Structure formats: C-alpha cells, structure tokens
Length: 470
Ligand code: IMP
View (tube, helix red, strand yellow):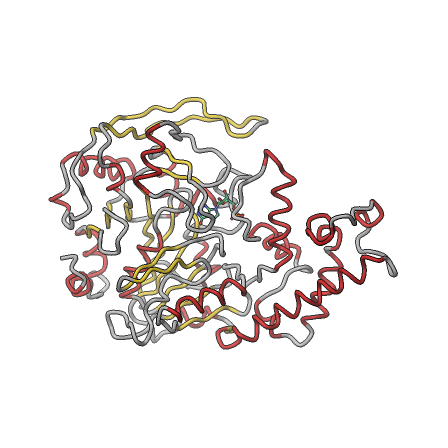
C-alpha cells in the first residue's frame, strides 16, 4: 500500500515546510495540498532555480523533463481543502513554465474560488478593525471561507466553466452589494444609508447599473481564467491520491501551522482553513495517514497579530530576524521573532500525532552566547486578548561554529547537538532532518529519517547520495 506522509507546521507557519516537501517529493508519486491558499509561500529550489509556490503544490519542479528518483513526473494535486485564486494559480503556472517546467497538475473541481471581491473584503474588514486587525495576508482567505460556509455566495472551480457563470456572479454581487459598496474603492461616495442598509440596491437606484457592470466584468475575468485552467480542473481528485497503482509515497502538504488553525490556535488571530494533519483526509482525500512529520523551526516567528508569548523584541529579536531572513514570503512583512516554546511544541506534536521532527534553521542560532528555550508558559484570556502571566526559560549554551557546510549529526558542535536533544527529549519524538542553511542541500539527514524511508522500500540512500547528502 502506498505510504502516506503528511508534512505540517508545528508553530505559526513559516517553519520551512516547502523545502521539506520539495526534497521528499523526489520519492513521491504525488504531492497534495489539503489546506491554505495563496496566503502560504513555500520556497522551492531546483538546479539553482528558485520558485515560491503560493497556490501550487510543492512538487511542481518534478516534471517529465526533471523527473523524480523513479524517472517520473510528480503529480501535483490541489485538493478540495485548498482555496484557489485562479488568477494567482495562472501566474504561478506561467512562472514555472518560464523556468522550463511543465507540471503535472490537477485542481479539484470542488475547490472554493477566491474571488476578486473577497480580496477586497479581506482588506476592507481589516481596515475597519483598526487596532484589532488580525494582520491577514490580504489574500481573501477569511471572506472566502465565510462565503463557503454561507454557500449561496461562494463559487467552486467547476463554476468557472459553467455557461451560467455570469448570471451567478451578478446574483452573488447583488447579494453582497452592501459589503461591496462599503469596501470597494470604486464605490466611495455611495455610502448613503438607504443603500448601505438595503440587502440589494433597489430597482432603478443609480448604483444598480454600476454594480452590475462590475459583476459582469468580474464574471468575464473568472470565465477567462477558468478557460485557461480548464485542462487542470478535475472531478474527484481523491481518486487520484487513492489510485491503487500508486505504490510509493503520497505527500500531504500542509500550509501555515498548528497555532494558526481556527480551532486550535489563539482565535481570532488565526487563519481560516485547517493546517492540522487530520485535515489531509478531508481536504486532500487520502484514505489514511501513515506518518506525520512536524516541521519545527528552532526558534519562533509569527507574522500578523496575536500572542507570541516568547517574543523577543530587542537585539536578540533583530538578530534572529536578520540571520534568519525573517520577512514574509507572501507579504514581505518583517516577522516577529521569539524563542522556542516547548509547551506549545508538545501540544502540536500530540494533536497532530507527529512521529518525527523536521528541525529547521538551526544555523540561525549560531553566534548566540546562550539560547533561551521556554519550558513553562502560563497565560490567561482577558478582554484585550491573551495575556502572558509567566514564562520560565531554560538557557542552553550556544555555539560559534558555522553549521552551513555540516552534513552529519556527529559533526555538529556539541552544544548544537545538546540543543536538538533537549527538544527531542521534551517533545518525545526524534528529529528526522535538521536544516543548517537556506540551500536545498543544507540539511542533515538523521538515521531515523533513513530508517523511516527504507522501512517503506523508498530508495532514500540512492537519492541522498546522488544529491551529495551522504
Ligand atoms: P489569513 O490567512 O491571510 O487570513 O491571515 C490570518 C493570519 O494567519 C495572519 O496572522 C497571517 O499573517 C497568518 N498567516 C496566514 N498564512 C500564513 C503563512 O503561510 N505563514 C505565516 N503566517 C500566515
């Protein structure tokens, strides 16, 4: 039976999942995205080329001309749990083509569509929230999920191919006219109370024609994007990921991280789709999950509002940000930085049933005299949000040596190994890989990873040797 592995973030996103999936994809039949949207940014590198995937799955750089370890292209599936921005998906497809790749891609016909007006709402709602804003990526995620739950105002990818699309869009825009008038820059000056309170502008109202014009314009754009993507839109992608002829590995690619999950994160400062591993079955269509690898950055970052109980703002925060290049891959915003939070890591490991850790960015800690690691954190909920009550740190000694060229565990400085071992002991699971630099090859593969893959008859040693890891 095919080995199903999920790769998920154990923190607040930006743990480095893309690089992990990109390497594992060399041994996969398929990579399936099961959540998130264009708010994600997974950085991939191949043969010196770099590509940041927002909507596309991270196996897109393995095509016919650039096959995986079995000489095959990797199937890339956008499962029903992923929100699709057709305009951005097309842009990304053009980008990877310009780099010389022709990905094998399927987009589930049932994927919710991020529409133009939902992006307008995202930014408008944030602006209206003022100081209480969530700090979203502005990619329309929240409003698209709202519409999906509301049903009547949402579109799926299959609708873009529907001959009645224009009528549906006009109808949706009419239903949402209040919000469009409130938030859309074109409608400044139409904020008359009669229009704002009406469910739809009354017949004959001057704004009526303008709204319809806008709706028809949107519909035409959506239809043209649908036409270009038609060859990729596929019914029931779950059949592809469950195809019995798949013998090797299906990788489920999570987006964001456990503490941005709308159920398990610190609401309201979360995203709106589920990053947790269990979502791979609903959003990705796999019928089982054999192994969950949790990606854990060796410190913490967060972009956007909300608690970060171990945040360090002074020179240490600046050091982490600069050494780690901690600027959002999607928005370019500087990320807030902090120390590893062990109670949170344990919670995420437990909930996601993670069996191994992909530790990332250990090299960023080089040069620090000592590294604080939070071992107990208490907080309470108050009117103004989540308030930190107390945090206890264990301070582990740092190291000076450059880690970027190290490929074997035993060559790591003693204190770096101690730091990693402390995390393994605290979370109760082993590290499988350790990232020591931004490059695709700057990874230490641990025996636990090799055993895991060989246990599934995946020729991991061959791949690692070919790529210069062993
Ligand atoms: P949204 O997903 O754009 O609605 O943003 C909600 C929250 O999740 C904000 O704090 C974002 O900064 C955060 N967020 C969304 N996607 C990512 C991601 O891929 N990495 C890190 N943070 C993210």
